[in-house]
Amino acid sequence: MKTFKSIGSLVLTLAFIIAACEPQDNSEYALGPKPTAEDLDFAATPVQGKENIIDFANTSPMAGLAVWDFGNGLKGKGDMVTAEYPLHGDYTVVLTLYTEGGSTSISKVITISEDDMTLLNTAMYNALTGGANDTDGKTWVFDQYHAGHFGVGPRAQTWPEWWQAGPEEKTQSCMYTQEFTFTQVGLKLDWVNNGKVYTNGPGKDALAALGFTNSVVPPAGDFDVEYPLAESYTFNLNESAGTLTLSEGAFLGHYTGSSTYEIVKLTDTELYVKVVSTVEPGNGWWYRFIPKELNVKPPVVTRAVPLAEDFESETKKVAFSYEDMGPLVSPFYSNPAPVPINQSGKVFLYQKTAGFWSNIFHVVSGYKFDLTTQNKIKLKVFIPSYNDYTTENGKAGDWVSDAKLQKKVAVKLQNNDLGGNAYTTQTEVSFSNLETDKWLELTFDFSGVSNRQDYNKIVIQIGGEGHTGQGIFFVDDFSFSE
Image (cartoon, rainbow, N blue to C red):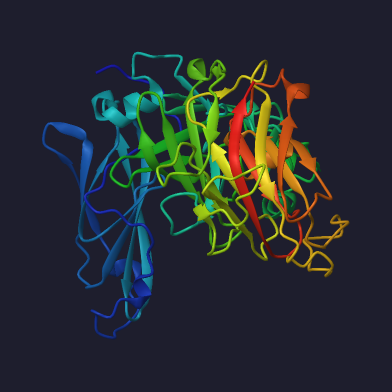
C-alpha cells in the first residue's frame, strides 16, 4: 500500500454521530458513585480486511453513557461505534463514561500503519478536492457574480431569509480575494486571504479579543480585519454528518467564530454551506462558492423591449408588484374622471399608506434595459385635491426635508440584482407640485443614462418617500418605448 505523509485532522465515518453532548441530563442510570479510571476500559479492533476501519467497544464494568473522542476532532456516542482512518498515524482515542455520580475519562493510542485512500474515494470528497489524482487540489472562491452567494438569517432557518447579497455587492472589500484549495492527498487546505478577512461588528470585536486588532471599514461596509495565516491547515469532511471542519481555527473568509460548516449542497460546480455564528447568537450565515476557473463575469444581455399597459383588462400586459401599498389598490379601477385627456374606462388606483417607501414596480427577467434608444417612460396621472397635503407626518430620518404628502410623481430605474440595495445605483426622474383634479401626461426621459446596462427594474412612486403621509392617486397608460 502506498504511504503518504499524515497531516493533522483526519476524517472518519461514524455509526453513531454526536452533534452535542450533555449526558448529565440523561436519567436512565441510577444514582451511584463517580467512576474512576480503574472502572473504565475499551477495546479497539480493526475490521477484518480493513485495517483502517476500527470497531470500538466500551468494556467498562460500570454502566454509563459512553462518549468518544477519536483523536481527530470528531466524536461518537454509544457502547459500540466504528471509525474510519484513511491516513496513517498515531491517534489518541478518549473514552468518557458519564453516570449519575459523575464522569471520568481514559485514553489509549492506536496506530494506523498505512494509508487507505480508497476510504476517501467518495462523491463528496471528489467533488470538494478534485479527487486523489488531482495533486494540486481544487480551488473554490465566492460566487460573486450571482445573487445569493452571501446571506444571513435565523440560525434555525434553512435559508438566509433576512438578507442576501446581490452580484458583486461586496467587491469593495476583501471578501472576494479569499481562495480555498482543498487537496485530497494529505487532506491539505491552502487558504489565500492577502492578509485580511471580512466580518461584521460582533466579529470584529471577537477577532480583536484574539489579538487581531487592526481593521478598516471598506466601501462595501462592515470591516476588513488584518489576519495573518497559520503555516498550514487541514480539513475534515464528515460525510455522515454533512459537515466541513477547518483546522487551526480557519474559516471561509467571513468570520463568525466557527470553523465547522453544514454542507447544504456540494457538487463539482457548487459548494453551498451554512455556519451558525458564535459571536452573534441566533444568526446563521450562508455562503456559495464555485471553482475558481468558473468565476467569470457573465456577459450583460440588453434588449429594447417596448412595454405598455392601459389597465383596461384584468389580463395584465405589464405585471406590477406593490410595496407598502394599501388594501384599496386596484389595477382595474373605474376612471374617476373620464374627461380629456383620459376618457378610458379603467385606470390603476394607487393608495399610498403610512409606509415610508410606498411604490409599484415591474422587473423584467433575462435581460437588462437597452437604453440607447428606448429611454422614455410615459404615464397619465390624476392627483386628487382631497388628499391632505399640509400635515407634517412622521419621517424616516433627518434626511427627509419634507414630511408632507407631496403632489409628486417619481419614476426610478434600478438594478434588481442588488436586492435591498437596488436604490444605491438608481436613476430617478420626477415631477413635483403637480396640478390637482385633472389628468396629466408626463414623460420621464432617461436618455441621460443611455449608456447604463445594469437596469432591469422600473419603480413608480407617488406622494414622495420617507414620510408616513397617506393618499389616493390614479395612474393610466403606462409605456416604455423610444
